[in-house]
Length: 627
Image 1: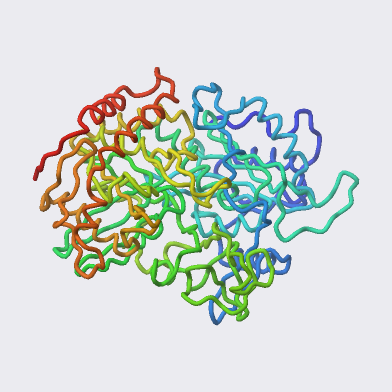
Image 2: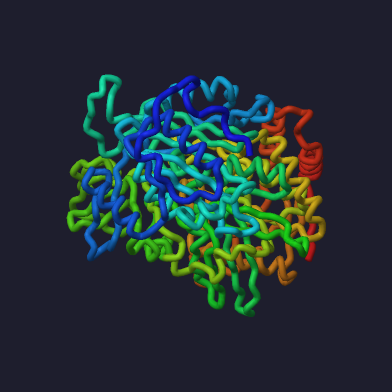
């Protein structure tokens, strides 16, 4: 592996801190050399190697409570749980400060921000110089996926944020076992992070720390050729927990392209039918569009069972039998709290009973957390996510819309047996979805793998609070990967098509779903949440060949009487309205898609997707029934 050319400032003679010298017995000298270089550049007071133990996590959380970064929650309500309040200027992913620093700008493509790697390295080196002065530098060896698994990958994150260390311990497999797995020749991703707020200034004067340090200058940079991540200035999850979107999607998508696998923004569920037949589905939704709700779905229809394998990221690779197998590379959940409650996601509500870090939600007077959607009746008084007094009459939200919970997956009552199996699970179907108030039907089945790739490539969704910027704006978000593909999106589309060719007849069927259709008054038509099991039932019955589909230009649509409505306050005519093909709306849609395709380099854009667009445009006008 090629490490970033020297991390230390060129010509630097700054000695290593004394505490950096003792380190665990390392199987890989490259790690030692990198840590030494970073220590010389950032000049921390001490260097701590994270071992992943419970005692270590306890020490960290106690220290952060003393510092004011964490508030210990009432153990009678949430044992071993904590609340963090970020700075209001550091609450979400900063997509406008996220860069793909490929050697060739065309390799980043039109959907990514690009900076020349040599220029970016120089600017980052200047920012990181002495950035940890007065702080502790933590070295976190981690594994994405079970340690030693065939589909797993290793990384080492350096950070000066104990909040990041504690969160990474929940989200990944950190510590000595991961470190021991990075033997000489084993690939690993170096991931460097700093909040960018040294506690000792240039004159040697020490300053008090803040509860949530961050820098107004923020960079989240990825170097795809050398497989490196540099993040500066933010302490927020997606920007600072570098095993998550930075590694598991942006860098891993490049690795997957080069090595013939797939790194996707997808949940994975195990579905068991009343006949005790088992299927595994992978589904892509943009952030805050119901991934966690579907991953932990509690079906309302008798006899069906849905279990959780993963709620956010899937790494998929053809197995020895030629079928697509997937793992959840994460160890925990980083879920959106607002809107999560006993009626919308009872499984998630049970999962976060304790051992959880909450961020940017409200604090009740009894020492427990609260957010909009947790209970039908709000507390009479609370402290909001910014630390201010709050009542239902305050006129503002008690929790930030992107407030989060971080918790280990093994606490989830719906977690599937073998969810962390190194071999992964066979994927029987792939789903694409987003927030579309009109046009896109409740569910449809792609006519072919290529048509399924077209469905994924043309996904559009209303923006949410998971990223900075305006909420509720419709934007194209192909495969729910717009912020996360680490290379040219047109090449990513081509990679999907090539994976279909590689899988051949073993390629899983692809479906589109849309829970978010609205009526003329702006109300959701489909009840969603646990009732989405009825759509999953139809998909599984299609896999079994037990239900028919009307073949239309946009795919196979259900026959309304074959969707289970028992117990729902929804008549069949209303259901037909969200199942049918709206030809006029789709003529407008294909014109928009054509314009969207024109934003990509024609020489890189897959011709097969242009052919799909031409076919759909030509065929808009007729439909037939096919079993």
